Length: 468
Image (cartoon, rainbow, N blue to C red; front, side, top):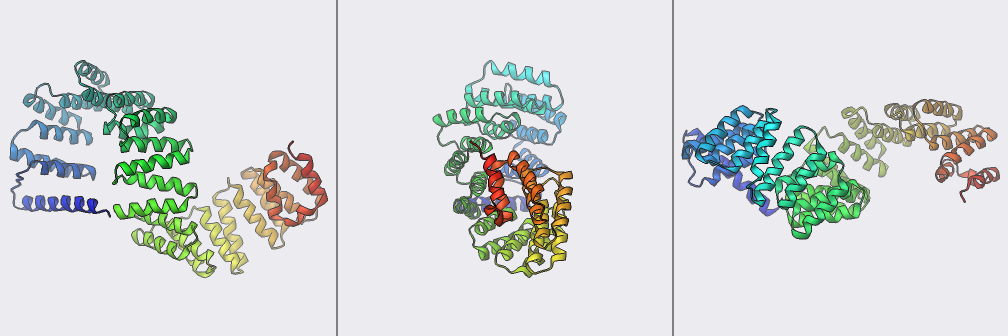
């Protein structure tokens, strides 16, 4: 964990300890009122809203009725979906601070929460007339919340866009823009908007993050990585930026860069099983199976029910040809997650490697039955049967596969099976069909049966379907 993060956490835990001690003595008093705000913020972040309300109550007991703390109270009540109570508190706050824009915006939120959408929008429109640029941005954010409740995501996107055009640093608008872009499918527009924002505010971490997310969705992976990197360079404690950057790097097989991002996250933030799992994946992909296993084991220690971590421990043992150990761990993974075809397939391969063909066939079959829509598992089962001199059974498996799924790779496998059975003419006819469906996939034929690469009739059929 980073030094600044550690200090921040130490400070808030010290403050919580002080507060708890004061509660026990029935006398809560902080000379610095900011302590109350820090406690409220912490409990709100942790979704402990009742505790946050308790702190607000303690603050009001100390300072008396305060518009600031009353409005914090109203905000928390709105989060708890207690809009009527929130509106009553807002009434009190407005007596103390007439014309307070924050109170009016919260009132609009309360109206929206109660389904009084027309009243809410009318109130917000009236507030826009005399609002400053920053105030107008906040009004637009509140309006966006109404469209969020209505699930009118396109309108929400344009209102948030207006908020950011007024104030490119509006944190709440930037935070909400991230997910509304997903719902409204406005990724291209998001890229343009955030690039404009970054021209004026180049150190805007949330804008970089949103830009990265839009590029990520559009499969612009290098641009996404670059944007995520700028996000965490602009804000060193931006955990999502590190993790999402690492995810893209892992996807494009830049394992060292992914590892660097995950390790930076490990140094700066609280670890969890997912973080250990992904660090292990990087080491596994890089061929360092011993270190990979260590991180997968740490993921398991953090969360024993993380089936994926057990599975990858098994994969590491398999790659080191420690088959019995692999089998034991794969069985654990399957016990934790019974409906994962990859686990069954890996277990079947391990049993095949130790010569237990009966169990191997059983688990290859389990893989195919678990994901019948996936051609790959039917093909693996059929190839296993062919390899063990059972082409007739393999053909039956392919017939069953045709009832559940479709793919040119199944045709290539059927052609190989027919060649194995000595039925060459039918095999060539099926090959023609496969080539017509997907010529580029024909190398699969030779992977399954290398001898066919030299067969003159096979070469002739392939030549006929060769694209110009």
